[in-house]
Structure formats: structure tokens, C-alpha cells
Length: 201
Image 1 (spheres, rainbow, N blue to C red):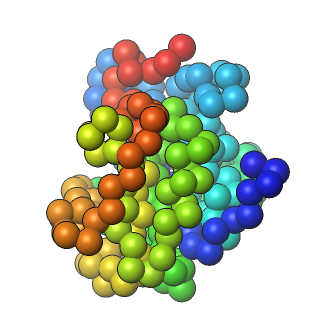
Image 2 (cartoon, rainbow, N blue to C red; image 1 turned 30 degrees about the vertical axis):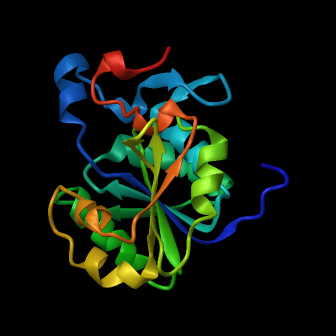
């Protein structure tokens, strides 16, 4: 991304979930499992996502649970060099994580909300979505009509984000008429890693 200029806004990488389905299959943390990153090197899923998100926006924050020391250790090893801040919280679910992250970055004009278990999104998609950040923005990518991630939420919706306290995230916002759908040729926007078979190797 040598010619890329970071967009005014904040990327939030949500990585506080427990990943229970993956643990039931393999007994390990899915975000620490190896997977094929966009640069074709095998790295942990969490690191692949950090590398993809680094430098997209003027600020980037990785949201982690304070009950996951191995993820924190990996993040502390790599995040500073990538310009990514760490926010360690006691999370009650996706919505609660998003609420705390929005409050911690309240000065941002908008947020690019990324899920840490989606390492296969193309760099062009990340950049295109980052460019949509505006205070009044609600935007998401689609692939052949299917909605995916990452998603953009403008600061106009900050109050609604801060009020979240469940495991459903901001899904209700993306039912509003203001939502802009951006079609991309990128199946990666639909690919999250829930079980070992989801990994691209």
C-alpha cells in the first residue's frame, strides 16, 4: 500500500470473541491457527487480518478480551510495528465489544468495522470500503448480491453503537434505508473462519 494515504477514520478489528465452535473441533484458538494470508505466506489468522488492516485509516484499534493472553501476546508482538493500538476489554459479546471500541474512539468521523476471523478479504476491497467513511455513512460490500464484511459506520450513529450490549453487533443499523451496498468481485467478504474446514491452506 505504498501509494495509499490513510483515510480519516478508525478501523476497529474485533477479536474478543471466544471462537467456541473452532475450539470444539480442534481444541485451539482459531485466531492463532495458521492460514493462507493475502501475501501468500502462512501466518496466524489474527496476524493476517492485522496486516490487511494496517494503514487503511488514520487510526486502527484491535479489540481483545482481557481473558485471552495468547492473543494479547501475539498482538503485542506485531501490532506496534503496524501502527495498531490495542484495546483490552472484558467483553460480553460482539455488540458490547463494538460499544466499548466506539466509546474509546469517539472522536473518529466514522469506523471501518472488521472481524478478526476474516483474513481472505482482498486489499482492494479493504481500500474501497475505507474510502466510504463519512460521518453519515452506512456501507457494506456485497458479492453476487450477498452481504459481507467489513462494514462502515459513520459517527452519526455513535450513540447507537455505544448502546449495544449483546452478541448481535450493529445488524439493526444495516436494515436502515441509508445503507449503501458496494458490489465487489471478492468472495473473501463472505469467508469467516468458524471451524477448521473454513481455513484456506
